[in-house]
Image (cartoon, rainbow over all chains, first blue to last red; front, top):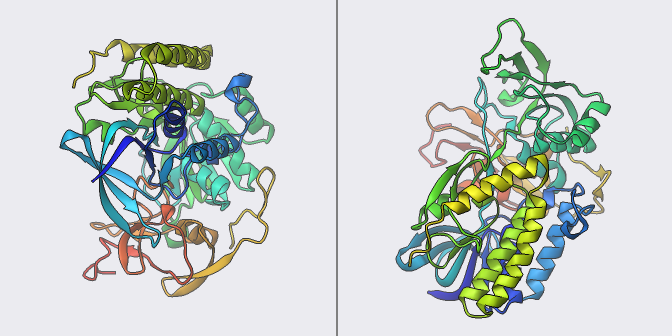
Length: 374
Length: 107
């Protein structure tokens, strides 16, 4: 059995920041596991420039932030295991890890870390309509991974469901890679993301149908692939209005209907969870140190409520500082001072019409923290 | 139909990627070394990865990040390999998966 000071599950912005911050504050033996071929989580598919202030890397593309974090983690001696998944926990917080081997096979490894950070991120929501399992219907994030990371088009003619920032940005990025976006479809009465992104779509002449949803997808293409998409207008109670159907020829449907926190590992431990609507589902209750209710286990990033990359990164910074404190690498006073600084930045990220909702949700989750159990 | 994006306005051009060959259902196709198997298939417009256990329905790329298992295929004789997070390697034998991908699963 391996013993470690810190096991981080997930090498996205939250997990990498946790590892970097812990290492910078004196934590020695750190392992990060990630089931993907490359670390960085979803940062590498975010080829657009981020908004916000200078200290939050405004104007820098997500993929460049990912590369910088990776380099920093490696220079600090953080051990990153790729193609590796933490598949469960045994008593006494022993982690069971399926470790990827260089030859492509997997080996089961047991690890007893002094502290654990669960940074497993989020997962796309699914929308069910007739034909939703047809090949060619996929998550907007899946399409984004294909064009921006693998540089392969997921299809030629695409219908996007959802006009939140993911729906808008991915639509634009699909166009940048030469795909034809047929239209965007939104159930709400108005566009759900930032106007600046929606304007780019409109300027390109792509229609956005609000108060509409997908009624049916037909799979009469080659090998049963998507061939046509029928959308329909909906009333304020989201019921279809008969006679308002429109049908488009398309080979791909991308779903951008929000994300939910991935909390599978959290549920395996003695950790309290709470349902939070704005955060997308069940999230672990935690305090301002990013401590869960189970001693030695920390949480950060979208696992604790779906937000965005910079927030995840700053939460990881908080977790890293707190872990260094728990392991006695820094004093409580030092940790408090560092956390105060990071929280000021986090508060800065949770401003504006979208941010205030998230700030309130975060407060609600933290208010329910009953304390840490041994 | 090749669906690769060779000249991207932000990501630039793909200069001399190392190309390899993999075999998919008996047919040789090109792949970029190290790219996910799924990307190589998509580049050739191959969208179906498996057929479901009960209803024999086609499934393909859905989450693209190793979460949903819709892209599972039989790779070098091993069933249930998530092709979206498994790198392509020279000479790999990739087969469409039927049901659980075992010898008894009917095509």
